[in-house]
Length: 240
Ligand code: ADP
Ligand code: MG
Image (cartoon, rainbow, N blue to C red; front, side, top):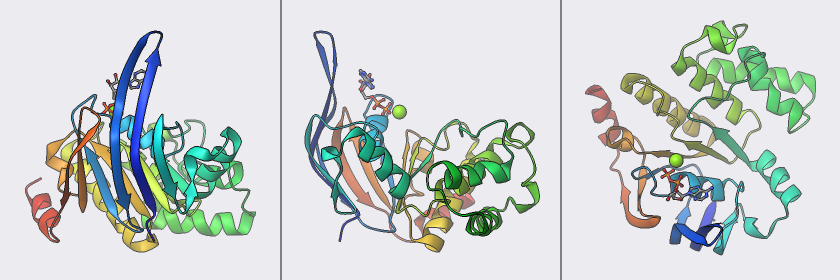
């Protein structure tokens, strides 16, 4: 079964009398455990689309199913619950809580969103710290670690609730290229480890090849779908 199936999705923003069509008639499916990017220049609709997939916003027209649930039909509260159960988020500017340590940032969704009991919480956080290579930094605060390290913590935090899907809107935009490749490599490793689908957006043509499936957006419409051959990404990384 598809993890996500979207059909004829359109999103129109209305500001007074003005209408802006941010997404036009988009249809696509995404399989479980895939590694997908949405690519396109600024204004092409990437953030709008990720917000629609992430149930942060609703399409004006069209249908969408995620893990078999018709998400546009959910009410405001149900959408929040759905997000907490099934979706993790990674942000361009990391969004770590500055007053919490690395450990506490990863633990936070397990207390606030899912109410996981303490022994299980500790087990999950320690495993994720290990998986993202941040175990020796767990007592540090966000302002004491680098951008690349912050994004590693954010990846661990996104995975702490065992989501089926992680959405990352321009996760490498604030990182240099070597660090960007590292972060995408880590996301791919986590996909392999946990079978979580990762969807990231980027406007950077250099890192696009790191995805296994590339959807290119232009003015809110789907311009192309490209399936990257295995091994291409690894070769690309050598030139970073
Ligand atoms: P991208 O993330 O690829 O830069 P966006 O999804 O942010 O693209 O924007 C797509 C289009 O929708 C742009 O024309 C943008 O100006 C418009 N847009 C985005 N968000 C809003 C909003 N909240 N209200 C009105 N227009 C918006
Ligand atoms: Mg954007």
